[in-house]
Image (cartoon, rainbow, N blue to C red; front, side, top):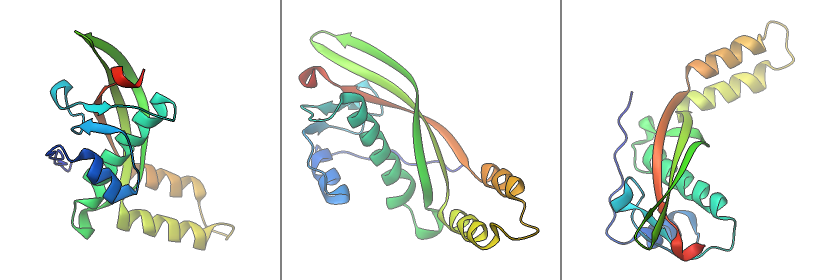
Length: 153
């Protein structure tokens, strides 16, 4: 399996997200790879779990697409929460969330989409086989994301 590089942070998390996604969020800290590098959520206007999912999706998209050469990029990146814990350390409260991430190489995904559009409704197009092949081509990985949330509660 392809090894994705952890994103570096020089206390510029808020600026990177603003530049890459045009989102102005009340954040600081790092990319949430462990408790020491937690993303600090300072405030939120949306439900906290929704914001956490959005941030995890942004991290995955940067890791799996934006920072890679074109031929190595993944698309159809989807995250599903699989586990959640809350830890308190002193006055700080952390959400430690595990996400299952699925994705497919962009070029392969595009070819599947084109095959589907071309074949759907035609004789000889086996939709079950099509989706079986898509499933085989899908990368699945599990990632933990740490959020420090006490300011947002």
